[in-house]
Length: 377
Image 1 (spheres, rainbow, N blue to C red):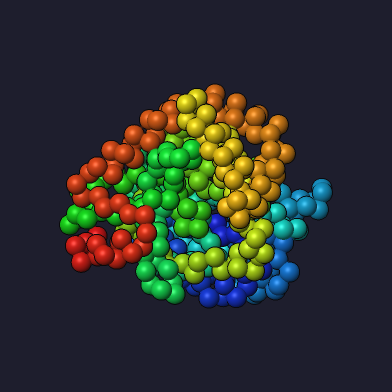
Image 2 (image 1 turned 90 degrees about the horizontal axis):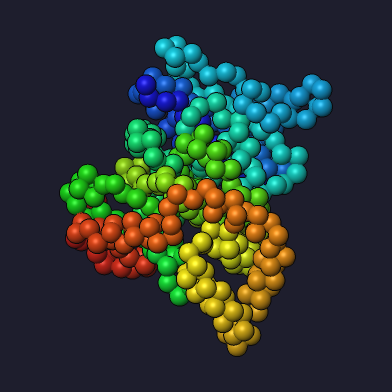
């Protein structure tokens, strides 16, 4: 039976973005329900916004989550929502519309985790509030989960303003002391069937579908990486380590207004946070002893030379990450115990993928543009 889908959208002061992009999400969810005869719901988690998001959503017939009658606080489980239909029951023609509120701003990862916990259905389509979804984007993502090893499947992303391709498959490797996750690829074949499985190093949290139970079993987005950045890379790598897989689904297309929310935040702080979380990601997840030594040596070199390279912010990021060493050690031990694949086995999967004759790998958008006349997919 085709499963129902919960669409989770975290939002912080995103009223205007929701007004612009939410209609496409509702249309895509309705289309999937009608075509598959399966239910959908949209859960928006309002992360301590100070704009009029809540009032507007309520005016759009979103149903706010019930509060715990004993504590007066929102509950923590899906039981606060309407139960999903029984198997065989008619699917609703429109998605159920749900609202959760964080009383204070908690950040992307914790906010998404609340949405996953509250989801009624086995697949969760996680979207940023600045993403426009094409009408037929959901069903191809769902098809990937007939394979029980699939943890997540992510969309093909176009930049809404430039209309250029901004999100394709991601390759993984290790170089110069760091795990490399942002090298991209596309399939050059007449059909993507000639390239499958389209493995991807990580599923970007702005437009990807996850197996809800696997997501929760792994532990959700790591609180060490709150409030934002590297959570999606981290949980994808943890899934790979556990013997699961992440795939790229080019038939599912979305259009993204890149970094709409984070433009409002001090960019120096953003860069330092990104670098801190990149370090924490490595310290928790990189377990190969030789590669770990290489990483430590490179971090030491980058730290010593940071003033010469006019990168004093790197020193701040390292110091900030080091303050979390006790928590990092605990998380590292947990992940080592759970691992079923080694780091090198994961990198070999992507090395083999890149060698396929119909796979075109690239680092910069210009390379992809130059190859475009030869591309059919």
